[in-house]
Length: 254
Image (cartoon, rainbow, N blue to C red; front, top):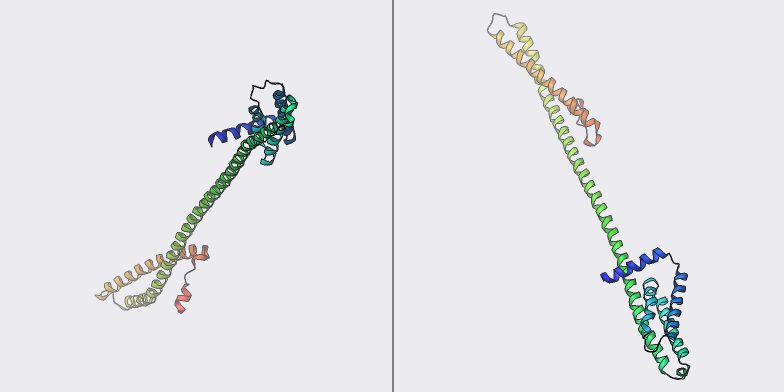
């Protein structure tokens, strides 16, 4: 098989270098066969002439289709028969020259047919290999596209989970703030009223001041929670897919 591929490559390279059209190439083959026939007619009878016909037949078999190769084999056998008859006209009435021509046609046909079929099969294999390589490249591109899609999907899933976590945290903070604000307001009013009514010299006055300080601390904490909620609400509102947490008004009316 490597030898066949090397021969095919060689003849294709020669064809590209000469740039012969099919009619010109076939005319050259016929001319070469006629020259071999002339050589057969002029050469000594002891010289084997049949191998010389393979010189043009083999390139023809490599470059032409199977029917053309068989036709050239038949032409070579006919030219060989003509050269024999011209060299010895008396043998035209004998069977031997015609039998020899048939034998040459069979031999030439077997050689050219085997070469032509092998070249055709090699061409089909090369086409199949190129098609397979194209499929492999397509599969590689699809695999890369699928990998990119999977990475993008993973990134979107992580982003969605992070947004959902922010929404849950914001909702929980909102609920906690709402639950704390109501009793804290009552405690603030109660501590202010207690400070107003308690005499500064009474022992309850320091306790009322501590209560008022704790209420102020709680209010500062709630203020920080509200600011964090505003940041979370803004991040969720920037992407509606994450879903916005319920507003303070909806929580208070619920």
